[in-house]
Amino acid sequence: MQYGPMQFFMPSGQEPVIWWKNRPISLTLLLIVIQIVALLLTTFLFAFRVDAFGLLAYFSELVLKGQIWRLATYWFVIPPSIWAVVSLLMLWWFGVPVEQFMGWKKFLKFYLTLCLVPAVVCLVFTPGIQRWIEAAMGWSSPGGILTGPFVANAAVFIGFATIYPNAELIFGIKAKHFVWVYLAITVLQAVAYHSLGAVPYWVAAGTAYAYLKFQGVQGGFPWLDRWREEREQARHERAERKRILESKEHFISDQVDPILDKIAREGMQSLTDEEKRILARAKDKLR
Image (cartoon, rainbow, N blue to C red; front, side, top):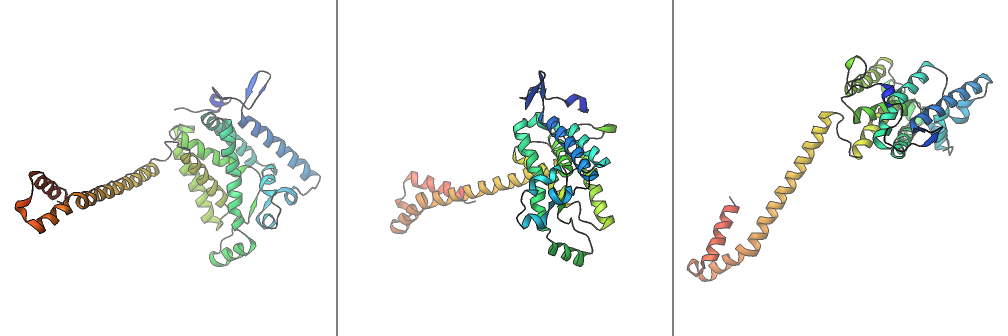
């Protein structure tokens, strides 16, 4: 499967979010437009020395003090940088095919989940926890700070790779292999800089994969699928063994025990042909 952005620029066969000049507009396109506007507004605020970080960015300490609106507003603080452009490109490339697969309403829930879960997890990194990590490990923690949609947009790529693991991206490299490259780079950065700053990205990646698997998406990473299949098979085998054992116990208590009681009272010669056949079946079952 060859993949390119123009192939998926507009949804096909899906209900669009809105129509504009008789053209269907995808949710992904709306998200990109909103993010571009947010980037321009952030640049404008910075230029006039307005503290957009202090007003809207996510700080776990402040959220825990009751400023819960930051769980939603941090997404709109997008400082101008090359990484902002890369993030928009990732959403452009990978958001539309994921939206096509899910439908825009489910994709909206998926995207909001990717924005919210890392922010909630980062509530763990209070100043006290940050100091403990730095003292115990000598590493810097995520700091409980988030800005922009960078984490969510990167996780959309994980979602794409889960749905289309064998899609060929640049140089013929498959999406599932790019995931390992992406994760390896974040781990190498963590080791090199003694920093846990990639934790939100890891959380979002795991959330994207788990969310889609929970929705019943097949594919993704074969070894994980095999592990899940093996677990399911082992669970089924345990249930089957339990059923067989219970069946044997039921057969013995209902049919064999009365015959044994009869033998104890009257002897083997008292058994009918049917009772002898039941004992023979019981012997076979208990082998």
